[in-house]
Image (tube, rainbow, N blue to C red; front, side):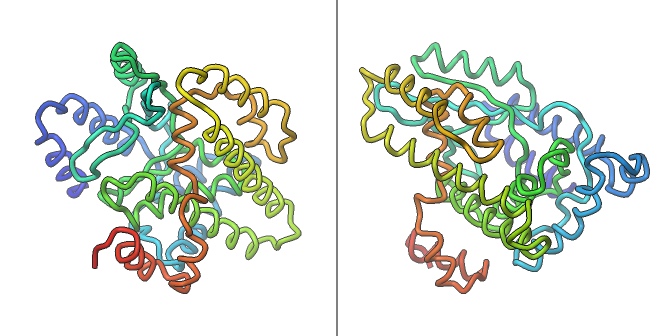
Length: 317
């Protein structure tokens, strides 16, 4: 908690954004204060509770992450039981240049998103960006990372997800906690997606085997993610500012006509895709960087991976 309070102090020193930081900081403090330990929740849950097994498995998932070299620290030792989303993210794009709007933050540098604890604050920001001619939208997020500054509570809603989806999210956020490069959102998110998927595959295979329903479900999710990625790449090859609306409608229709293998894929097909949402997909695109080759080159060692990224991608020793 001391580290967290220090972070709040540093962030608030930026002056003009004090209300934003103060609001988010108070929200995080509130969620931590209202969280419960796994043991407390297990004592309250009936034996037949649907997410009881997810709670019982959590210590093993975290121990697996530690064995893989991830900085678990005190993360996810408590469960956030508040029912509302952890945060609301604002994203925006320039319709003429078809590029994402960027915010500049202390410590983390440039980022193509801005989080708010409360929906009304996020909506106010989105409206202000629209008045400047940008296309903006707001959406809730499932989880977040403090980048190791304080021990995050695991959002309770994650416990109700399928095991493949749940462990992908947990490993993704723990990668952020372990490896983070300021101002490199596309690299950070792409890497967290790649390693999150790799660790999830290894976890599910070790626990259930490759022929299991769980492994098949995970495989289907990842395959659907790749199919969506290919659709986005084809869209970006042909779109232009004057025809953007028609291009997006065609993209939407193609998604609806696709046969998806996973629940996540089916949810993607009915979502209303806006310009900033599509551009954000590319920020998270694990195929945009040669992670498979890099991961094998460093012999699946997280510490070596960080050093290799700094040397080969960022040009720093």
